Length: 371
Image 1: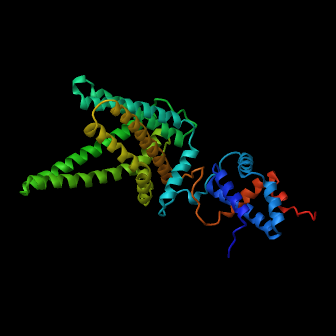
Image 2 (image 1 turned 60 degrees about the horizontal axis):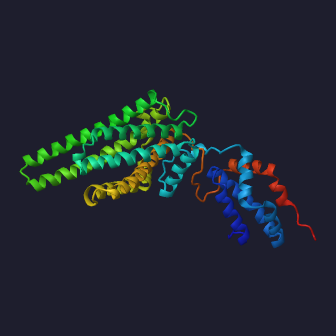
Image 3 (image 1 turned 120 degrees about the vertical axis):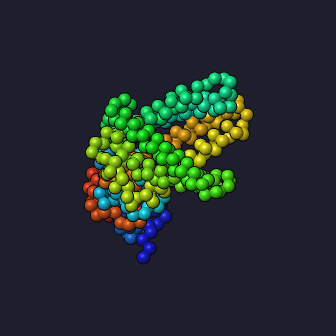
């Protein structure tokens, strides 16, 4: 059965759907479903009745503002949609991350500004230390400044995403615990990878393999080891996010168990949001260090890479915060993909209750005058 309305009504509902983006997607779909039913009733009475109903509703953007203001904020996602273990499409994972961003506190612009300025400066100086060693740039000092800026931005970003009522920029035990946890996990992963690669190369050499064969074994083992280490790090990232955001009681074990069954969705998020930017970051570094003569062009590349690297960090913050919500079973109080299924009936009733104060139902049900 074709339940499509005449084109003017479909255009109105499509515009209204876009304009209601500040609501949770479940509630937004409930609003549109309810209005679609009323417009269908008027459409059945004839074209003039439908035209009168659309005129009474006014512009979709104005209606969306009135509806959103009538409810006092964003609606929470129902708990059964909060922790997806089912396989999600890439678009659904991206919608989850966007939802986390919408639920975050204001301040990501400052996080991005800190990242961009610090990363541009340290990029250029670190490249200079390699390309022009005679200048005497202290690469260790530059790297330390870069790490401190990134850790400060990550801590602030996690607090904005998961604890927006807390001061984002402060140096406390949560920041120190997060920094120590991230640095320790990274160091252990790198050290473990180095030991495994050295052991594999020693075994290959003892087996009488040629130098080329040993190098091939080292490369293969390094790739596999780094992939496994990255997977392990992804499973504890929600715990690190909880440390930064002062979400006490969420342990590393809870992070490990909470990510079980969700790694496919997590990897999709990283592949869609983080990996492309990281590949671009790697390419920019390659051009700056190997291909482009050092000069004004290098400074331009540093600017581009600073923006790209800031995007990597912010995308990682939002994705890890989203995974924390999945692992902890916490609903995301912002838009998310709903799909084609009918919204929950409780949300439809909630939408009706919020429509009544705006007199929408009364206007839509008014009979068309005979004149």
